[in-house]
Image (cartoon, rainbow, N blue to C red):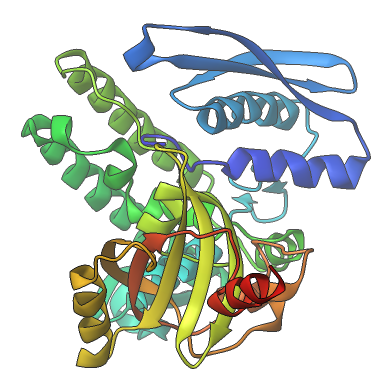
Length: 384
C-alpha cells in the first residue's frame, strides 16, 4: 500500500490491543465502489459493538488496514494506548515523548543488511552539557543527537537518522511519480523500504514493549513524520489522476514453503509432495488458469540444473509429463531440511521460519499427473 505507514501494520496493532484488553474485534465489509478496473473496497472496524469510521483501499487488506488505522487513532485520543507510533506519552519530569525510533532504525538496517552503531561525540564541539551521539548505518553517518542521558541522546540520534531516511525516500518517490514512469509499474513495487519495513518486519508484543521501555525523544518527532507522509500521499493522489487505468497484482500470500515472489504470487494451495537429494517438489494451483502443476525447486549453483531443464524442454512423449517452463529466484535452500515444513500449525511470524537459510534457486514447472507413480501404474497393469 503506497503512501501509508505500512500494509497491515495497524491491523497488527489493533490485534495486539484486542489480546491485551480482551475485546471482540470485527472487520465489517461494506459495499464496494468504483469501476471494475479501479475497484475500491470499504471496511469498518467494530470493537465490542462500537462502530468506527469506514476505511477504503484498492484491496481488502489495504481497506482493513485503513479502517484499523482510524480506530487506532480514535482509541489513542481517548487515552486507550494502542500504537506506540501514534501515541505519545509525555514524561512530566523531562517533557519528552516515547517513540520507537531505535527499533525502526534497527529494522531498516536489517532490511538493508547493514550494521548500526551509535558513536559518542566529544562534548566540547557540540555543547558542554549532556551526552552527544550520532547514528552510523553502514558507512553513512547521520546528525548528532544531544540528551541529558546516554539513552536519550541515542534515541534522538536514531530519530534524526530516521527522519532523514524518510525524507530521502519521500524525495525519491516524488521524483519518480513526476517523471511519468509510475504508470507502468505496480504500486507495490514503489513502496519505500521505510514504509514496508513496518509491515514485513512487524514486531511481536514483547518486541515493542522492550523497545519502548528504552526510548525517549523530542515531542515534535511524530508531527515531522506525519507531515512527510502526508506530503507523499498528496503527491501520489495528484499523479494518479492523470494515469491510465491499471490492474493490481495479487498480494503474495504467506506460505511456509517459499519466499520467492513469482512462486508466491502466481500459485496458491502450495503443497510439498517430495524432497531429497534432487531438491524439493511441490504441487500448486495457478492463480489465473486454475490448473494444478508440479513445481520442482533445485539449488541453482551449477550447470547440472540447466542441463535438466534443457533435457525436459526437448522431451515430447505421451507417457512423459510435459515441461511448462522455468524461472530463477531467491528462496529457501532446497538442500536444507526443516521439520516445520511438515507441521500443520505454521506461524508466518515465527522467527525460526525467517532464519531459514536462503539461496539462488531454479524453479521447474511441469504437468501434474494425479494417476500415481510409474511403479504404481505397473502394479495396476499386473493386477488386470
